[in-house]
Image 1 (spheres, each protein chain N blue to C red):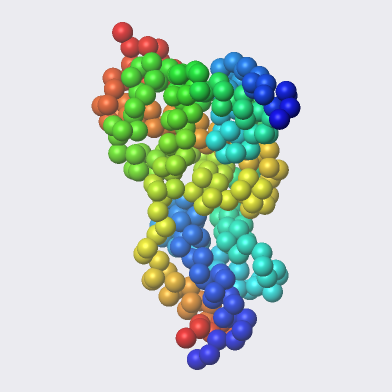
Image 2: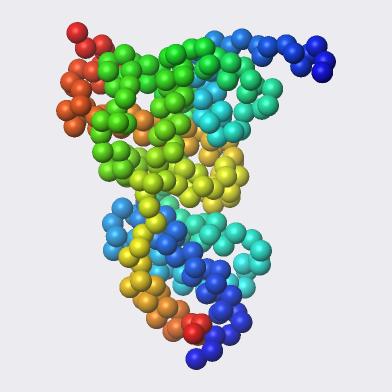
Length: 91
Length: 197
């Protein structure tokens, strides 16, 4: 292990942490910046609160829009219109 | 009747994605009947241009692209012309954090535990302008990457990023408003309206 690897991540302020919010949550922040953001939210209650809130919202969005289960009639309609174009449905 | 190999492949690849296309179309059109028409038109176009689809590519992404193009064409391309000047992804993230700070100070910190989140998110997504809603649906609901969403929307990845961040910020604000409307907090505690006394 080198000395550089033992060095703590650089300190960043709330503004910088806030600007990095969604890139961090989406895993799109460069590796070199992840430690600094993580270090900040580990020690800043305000930023940690928003990161946690934003993470929860992002997790809840997909379940708020479940896949429709009522598309059988539409499927039938589509198959009918495709049949007019020469389509044959698999048995 | 036996399906031709072409139709069997269309079945397995394209028709199998119907639920996702229906969800995407409903997020665009808002109205179920209109969304159904949109999906039907999408499939008709997909079938007619099936030869252009490259095996191994993402059929769902291809269908989303067709669906959105049909939707925009039906709306006479009004949504294609979007002024994205002033949209800055970092500033959107920053503003979202500032607004959250205000909301938390006003007692909205645990609002996700105090409101019916599902309906609130659905209403918030439905209220987003189309360009932002589509970015959020593709990435946050359908799980597409920024790059895939950029392909569907025919915009640079950076534009997807800023639209997505704006969408999330607006969604967050909408959830705060929903909490106020639901009586979870007093109206004076809405972010941006000052701290309640």
